Image (cartoon, rainbow, N blue to C red; front, side, top):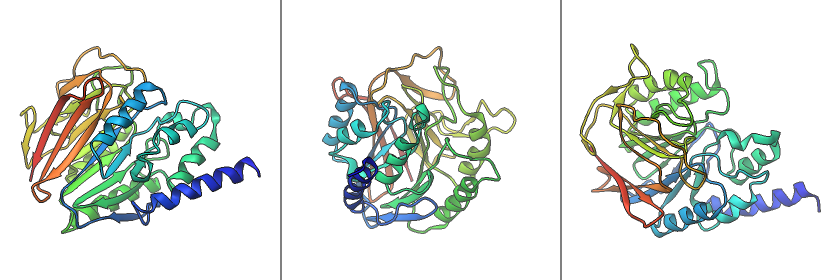
Length: 310
């Protein structure tokens, strides 16, 4: 049996499991997952690798019994994705992903294909609903300019979600950062300038990012067209927000890869640190409260938390 046939068979088996989470997760389409449930949680982290630290992240995530896992890119740093699939096996049937630059490294198109096949994706951007949350997966690795198919999809998708009477929250996730404190990687200005105005327009609540191997969380912020690198802070409370007029951006690039230092803290960032772990987001009070908590792997402690109430 050829290696390609083996890959297709393995991915076909996983696809049967994955459809228990989503009937249709193809890019360019929006799917629905258990849309009548309003008390649940999901977890998120990016920049994984397959070593001991990443395994600890998986174990701690399992302890939170999430309904959904968001893998924020740079999953395997090896030439094959096999080690990451094996490590994630306890959670793989409830995982969604976005693509990072290491999904392309080494001119290894076969590894990219492994992810597309495993998660039943035809493109790298897509959306779905879970309970009263609309999730939008965006890609920083394929064309995203105003003439791109992705740009049209994002705009149309967020417009539709904003008009839905059953959606109370919108969460977007993407690999590269729109905003960050000074650290190893800089923000991707082109994505910020194109998409933050759209996120503002359709009142996106939370944006999850990776790429820098650390944790950061902003105040609720809006796009500043006069000085785009310095967004407008709309609420200076450190962690309790009620109907904020702005979006909270978080960087969670600390699932397992070596951590990145900070050189300073951006004025719009309320919390930042270098610790391995993940973000756990709980929806409570009949879907009216979103509480995010970052749990550190070392001792399972709460290193940061925030609450948004609607």
